[in-house]
Length: 94
Image (cartoon, rainbow, N blue to C red):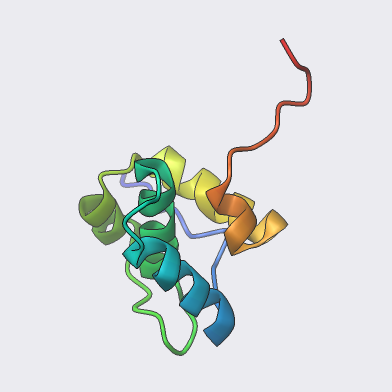
């Protein structure tokens, strides 16, 4: 029996959010993690300007694991696309 998972967290970016992510992706001075996250969010965009690729296609394009991609989409829905690019603050410091 094959298990089909449906996307729980869907991303629909506005023009402004998309423009900011494109600027972050195209700027050369960013960290690799931020670049990959911005690229993945742009590829996942299901809005009118986005390609709305499947998870498998986004994973091939960004070399992200399936779980990382799900967590990135979840964080984007919780704190917004620009907040999802940053590292999550620890609830309990070491």
